[in-house]
Image (tube, rainbow, N blue to C red; front, side, top):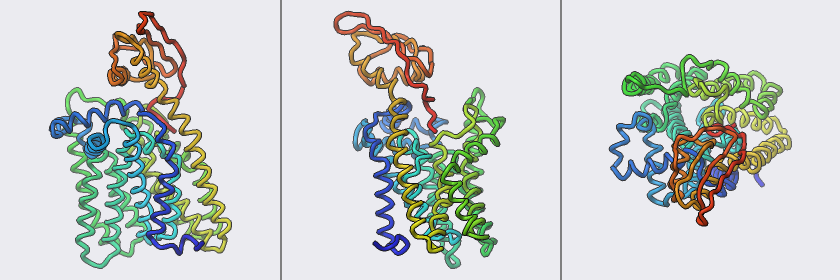
Length: 439
């Protein structure tokens, strides 16, 4: 077999797509998870009204692309888990190919970006974005944000003019802004690339200004129409949160262990150029973490929020493998790539699948209860938010007696009457997995 560096781009793309698909095949055995029971029906309702209510929804109009995507999948394939998992994997494949496209950046090149994309395809650290349909906003913002970045780099590295690439970058960035609020970081990633290679710095600075202007207008719109409105509060995020701690802990968790290995290889045989790549990859990771770092409910980012940052980790890993290959250590390069592949896939298929099954246990129990109950179901304690518990029971054909159940991560306590007229009381512990947060 020819070495990957000599494969045609189409062959490389096919291999990368296969890796991204195979790594997440077990997800088709999972049911919906928590917010899926809210967000997908919401998208269906908005679609039925031609999306007019969406523009009055201050939370989700800034994620309109996610609503459109969910509505399209639901309309085409129906309200079932498998089509939504397939749609998320498709988005992941496109994002993997965009990581390969980061090779337009001469700092790394396509040889390193191929290995980086392979790592990104199977990396377990951002699995929640793919394995949880409600996390698909991370895939969408990456898809359009990185499309904007790649098109902008094509414009920057090309001859004078290139208006088509620049216009494509602007359009893609606009779509990214309506995928998730974190899209504002993309101009900073553009600026980072410009500062890393100052040969066209004046052109780059002029070219990045419109993207910063769009981000500022977008942030101002959110502030005026949402944050500054009387009565608005979001306890999940705060500027007073210990964001430096969140950045440091999330960065370290991402670096361990493949980032440490890759950085050690680049520092060992890469020389000044290798150390430069380490610094650039670290800067990308920190910038990718920054928009999510103002958490109030955790000292580390949930895995879905590391999807953008993990592209920096992937560049670090790809550069290390390419450095080994370039220094005539192909056996060591192939061994490292194989270890990364096998370790990440094993974690995805075993550990992460087990965690997701634990996470779906309360909703699956409620479905069975609703199917057996003749009359209302009394929920006294559940790990689910009351609104989610109520929707799960209703979608299973039942109804609840009291929506104000106590929320506890460890208990599941319900009572109902079965077809024989007997009162059934289920009181059992459930997993201590932190619902809504995956590492």
